[in-house]
Length: 350
Ligand code: NCD
Ligand code: ZN
Image 1 (spheres, rainbow, N blue to C red):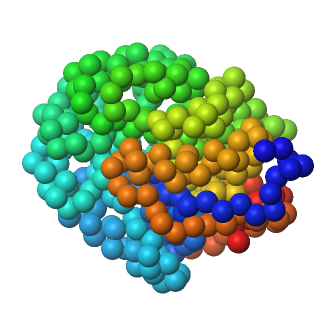
Image 2 (cartoon, helix red, strand yellow; image 1 turned 90 degrees about the vertical axis):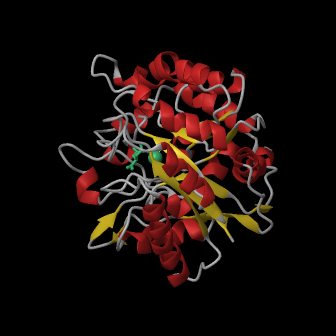
């Protein structure tokens, strides 16, 4: 659809967010309502401090998220929970997780990103647990970056595919794998062409921005996330992957709130906050690619189909309307700066 011929309103099946950070405690009150206003369900990342490594912890965390949603009038919102893979996560925890409806287990290579200190140091140490996951059909959600300081930061995803992901999938050919928040042409191509049960989530910010955004007119910490924004050719490859209609690609915002003073810092935290306008940001990206008609499948069908969950039955309507998200939200006892805060957007959820 061309900008000129774009419709005034646009209705799609209510979407889900397949990769979301909501933190804990008072922070939930700011961020959970933003997500719950748009999405029916969200897959909640387990990288709390300490990480969510047991079914018991995940179920308690789910109750805190549900309470924050309900307090804002969104009692139908469904947090889908994940466990954090460590070198020690025992195989029988996978069975408990499966029975309790935990949806996936997240692999953070140790040191790869925010709160990944407890992550995996050597994939071999997790093989008995991966074996159990493969047996029961529990998906492995992968932060796909190597952590070696010898590897250039911008190459860490591509190197991960060759040195970690391909060997891992050779050893566990029927393990379901989601390559989370992909950022490169190499990752999009691998996911498109690989054999077996693999899919990838793509963020709105990696569809909208390339790495220049981090350095425009000075260093801009609110565009810093991991995996870091890449060159324009990679952004274009992600747009192609998202808008072609392939069922292997779906929406995952990776909305990752950090207090303003920890982003605007000598050693600023990685993570972009997009939950306040998530669907609107994706709509901008799809519209720019003249592919608004592909948004619904990407946002609402491919994710549940891959995870083996029912598609949602409700709907949301986007209206063509110019509006400006605020520069900042209250966030526990600090503040939170959203991506595109103070900038005009052209779609708004009705
Ligand atoms: C995430 C966070 O802040 O928890 N940060 C980010 O830059 N995306 C962690 C992650 O998903 O890598
Ligand atoms: Zn994330």
